Length: 164
Image (spheres, rainbow, N blue to C red):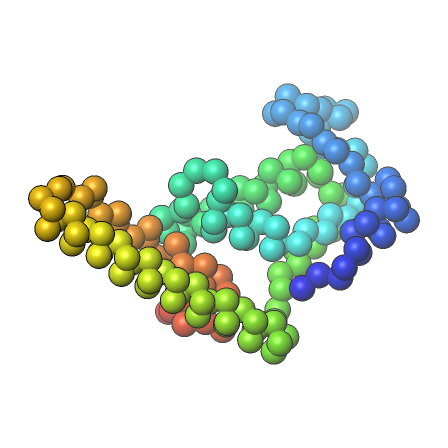
């Protein structure tokens, strides 16, 4: 849960805080790549962790190791661009407040029920096609152990199992 309009407030109050950086490996600033003189870099890791586990473009990672390598590669790219001189601060959320955990739990149960219903409907269609003598398309294999978004949700069975 974020603070509503916080980013807009900070951006308005400190307009030089936000810099758009277009870079390539050949960019340089006094012989070094970077976005200019930056003392401190603060990173909200939610903006990195979630896209690495569930990328919008391309295949999701097959293993937890691939996820962590993607996270580290993303951080390396940011460090290459920004080059903070004094501090790199990685902010990772702690446990969610109880109300948010209840809301997330409800969403997970709803999602699981919808997935089960989808599976039943798909099986019904396959059975119907088989009765009609039509060959159904090949069944889609599971997307792997990391396709479940609960894997990165604190306090869930999936997140506990991934560490054992």
